Length: 428
Ligand code: EPZ
Image (tube, rainbow, N blue to C red; front, side):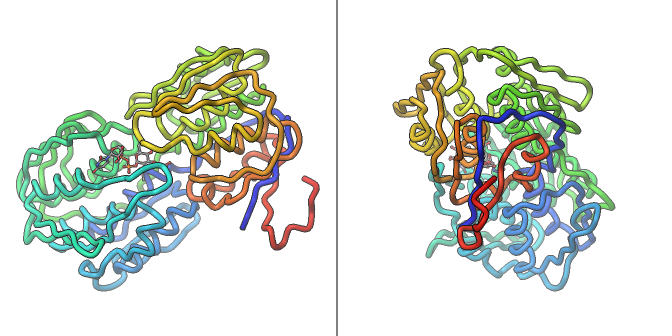
């Protein structure tokens, strides 16, 4: 099993460019099911979840090819919509549910294994199904699969009972080909949703209000391909490196990323005393000296992103005082706490709250990644810990961070990847 070996303390300094956003690329790939024409996507991150989605789409009949400028997808044969999105694929990546809306809208049926829970929570899809039902789908749940059928989807008004990112994305894609007008209320507002809407509009869809709580979609008869759609920058990856600058007393320039997408983090970094400079699509975070503790409550966009909660917690272990972090989006997203405490942090979890005692002298040891963002948290802690930190099960990290060790090395970190079997070079 691959591991990261990180020697600290070490400061990050230099320039880094975020890859395309995994959470924007995944719905964009699913959208290729909505047309027979080629869809050309650029700035697609070469990460595990993308490769899983490519395999799922190939299973369903969509061919794809990596090119210099990105990924080209086209209908490679009959779309096997009746074929199920198999459990062995869906269980490794919950975002497989994003094929539900397109398959149903385009082919009148879809069969997807229920994703089941994951490390951070139960992850239900009741809102996806309720929304598709409102558009006229018949929903059957049996043997761990969801079967959807609808001769033709009809536009409707539907209000989500909870803001769901992939739920909003599934409904956007389904409503694009429904007959008539759909009004979706209480939609999620993450930047990745506006990016999907931009792609769908480029394919011929008629969508207003994406990125706001109320979205109106005029269904059209068919959608066409696109010559090029560039995926937006990954704000969570970029935010991770900016937190790395603050935690390590470093100075990092993040380029080609929309600052507005990172506003909640940038505000918080400025509050704790980091120097934050924004110029166009360039964001610089530098920090020397003490960090002030500041509480955080995670929330759907434009709130503080749950996907940066673990990374921020690592930062707060170095603050001059205690901070409280409240996780409101997922019910089990504190699995990085025991690992941080093994490195010398002092964090107490009470329900949805984690109380972080600051000014902890962290020391390197072997820690285990449990999920994607917990992995990133442990890597950041390794930057500031004294000695070598070995982060095991780094395959979690590879789901959403493209070549992280190379990007960190370019920023001056002493980090290497090892495969336990082949690891012969203990020095970093
Ligand atoms: C997306 O997951 C992201 N994944 C997650 O990123 C991110 O953490 C999450 O949004 C929140 O921002 C992708 O975009 C591929 P939700 P999603 O549906 O859509 C509840 C990462 O690290 N809910 O917005 O699955 C749900 O239980 C990943 O990159 C229902 O109750 O999240 C949760 O408490 C992790 N019923 C809340 O809503 C539903 O039908 C938000 O979930 C759907 C969701």
